Structures are given as structure tokens and as C-alpha cells.
Image 1 (cartoon, rainbow, N blue to C red):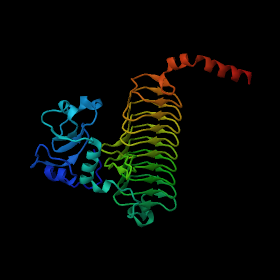
Image 2: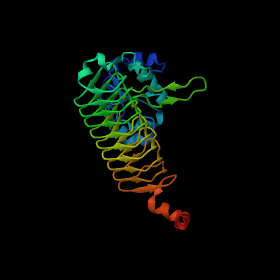
Image 3: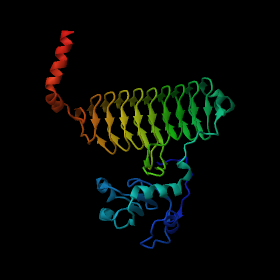
Image 4: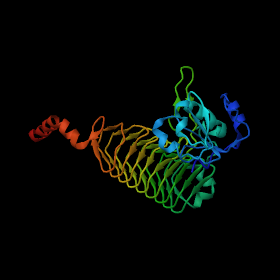
Length: 339
């Protein structure tokens, strides 16, 4: 499910679409209509997708997209049913195309539609503090609490038995039942996706949402960005400590424990039952398996298989880390004994 909140301008004629963004129509595509944009996995035979790296070749071969923005050296990985649009900069072209379908996804200005909760349907349905604001298209379930100075901006669905702390801002988010969001969180804003340019950086449209599943808890001051072409997801019964940052498109599994000040770059997949120590950093586009333990302060730059324990910068197998740092560890233990 991509963002159900943004207006989709599709279908758009393929010839018109390419002309609008000044892309050469070398194959002379004319009649087909494109209904939406999506990633390689989610795309249907009415959608346009993109393929920019051999890292995704295994899923590119199975895409159902009718059109794909790609490069000449990658076309052989795509199915014959998928028509290729060849460009020199895939991601930049895809950003322009996404903007054609979802022009409102670029801006994240403050929501001018908000009203004091006392002037809405929920004034007798929800327990709330002072200065609580609600935007358009907000739905709140039973037995919910909302703290002081919190703003639930447009396009938010909150399940039953949820607690939203004070000084929280939420938009473009679906929150399932029994979720606790502590003070100072910002959830559902656009991610840090852009193309550097000497004259003017170009933002990538973010048409995804944030989904926080049942029984999760989000610690104080944490930030969760919505996805670009897919959604950012927090699994069931997953707990985030204070000041954790989850960037766009990350998929965090069930029953995970993530300690304070952990930072995720974009588009990584975290399995179930993962534990991450404080101040660890997770690079983008990684796959971390189930039952993984990551030590505090570690820097993860490679995929991690199931049932693995890692530590260090860069992160390595825990046994190797201990072996490589045995002298230092012994000195630290000796210092502690002397105290």
C-alpha cells in the first residue's frame, strides 16, 4: 500500500509524460497510459517503475511493471513484457516522473487545516491535554490519550488504546492498536532524499507513509520519515528507545529492541527479534536477518545473516571483534579491578 492520502494525477499518457519531463522518447511510445509509479516489487502491469542497480537484479526479473526507467547495461535483467525507458540518470528521472503523478508530495509545509480538538468530533471521544490540534482526514480509535501541545496533522489514522505524548507532530501515518508514542516525536515527514546540485538541490518526492504496527513503542524525541516509493514500517511489539532515527523506506521487523540514538539510513530491512545497542549506525539498502544482535556504537555497512552477533566499526562478527581487541578489553577489565 502506497500513500492513500496524496492525490494521484494518473493515468497519464506515456508520450505526454516523457515530453513533460524532457526525456527522449527513443522507442516512440505513444498510446499507453500509466496509472501509478511504484517500486519493482509493488508495481502492477499498469504502473511505471525504476531499476538503477544490479543489486536489485533478482527482483527486477520478476517485476510486473509495464514500463521501467533504467540504463542500457541493465535492460537484460528485465522481463520482455516490461518496456524500457533508457536514461543516463535513473533516480533523477524517476523523481521528475513521481512529481508528475504526485505534485503535492514535495511540500511538507505546516498543516493550515488544523483545528483545536475542542472544535472537532473528538472533543468528547478522546482524553487530551492543552493546545491539541487535529488536521483534516484524521481518525482516532477508542480509549486514546493525547498530550499537551501535540499536533496530529492531516492524513493520520490512529487505532484504539493508543497513547500519544506531548509535543508530538504526526502526519501521513497509520498507527495500529495499543501503540505508545512518547513526548517530542516527529513522525511522517518527508525523508532526506535529494539530488545534490551546485546551483539548487532537488528533493525526491515522498509518496509513502509510515505504518506503526500493534503494541509498538516509540521513545522520546524519535523521528520516523515516511517512504519515498514504498512505506516506512515499524513491526509489532517493537520498541524504540529515545532519539532513534528511522529514515525513509526502512522496514523494521517484529519484536525488535532498538536502544537510544541509533540511526538508520534509508531503505534497509530489519528482521524479527533484532536487538541493537545505543548509538549504532545502520547504512542504507542493507538486509539484516532475524535474531541478530548489534553491539552499541557499531557501524553496520554490510548485510547480516540470521542469528548473528556483531560489534565494532565497521561491524564484524562478535567473536572476531573480541579476538581482535583482546588486549584492549583486558586492559579495560584490569583498570576496573584496580578501581
